[in-house]
Image 1 (cartoon, rainbow, N blue to C red):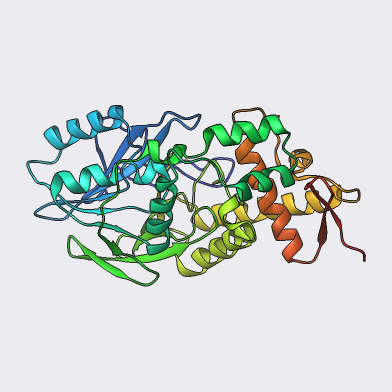
Image 2: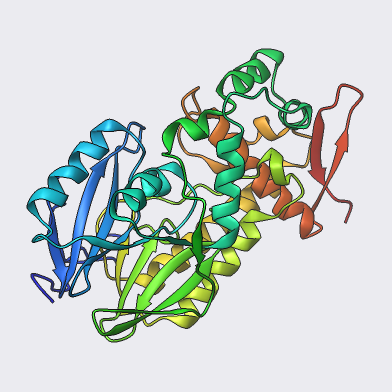
Length: 353
């Protein structure tokens, strides 16, 4: 591998062998034919890692960045200066979130190629994009009232509803489905599709046995935990249990000495240790939450059990979704019950022993 060694181990038991991220509009080789690209994001999480794989006559791109002009300009610089005159021949997207799929439509149209992603995430992405400009459905307003939102909070949700489509270029009308167990041939090597769930409905990861490399998207991140939320469109789901099950599945399927190429932070070693920590962190949160519910609480009342930081307006919706996901998990396990009052607010408490 180019410029890759195990490196020093941090307090989490992880090591970061690839050094600092490349500047926007630049690339850095992290393994034979695999190049790291970093793009800016207009969020509190201000960057995303994207991956270019040299496939001989062209390049395979994994994830695209958010759909804005700054990211387009950075990509144009890479197209002009770093591809050696070869085109993008495949575009693979790990999941539906705008920082991953945002420029998929623009890039696939620019190079005349087919988008490859999971069916569920492709269709969900189109559904969310179609909400742009529409008023929020009444079921969604009831969902947030049930979580404990004031009418001011519900109004804030209504104002931001439909914003998803503003962060993505128009998706192509045709795509190629990726599913669990598929194999892709890139530069003479086989990459296996491994699907996770919880953060996104059907999140695609790519693993190469020959190189022991996992392109993990948001499914495994080294320094932060991916958001796992319950949303109005699937209000009866249990995404946190899906997430925990996915972490355990990936650990069982892949070796510990895998080099993980994540969507955020830096490439790292320590896959099993990190997956264990992610599961343990959520299980610890579930335990603290269960202990808090000796008295009835709303979803917005339980933030202290799950988050160390004070929850402000910038992350209030995300924190509510995470709290609801943890509550749904405890409810599915039979640990708690929920009662809706005459104002449409849900109150959660421990089940009777």
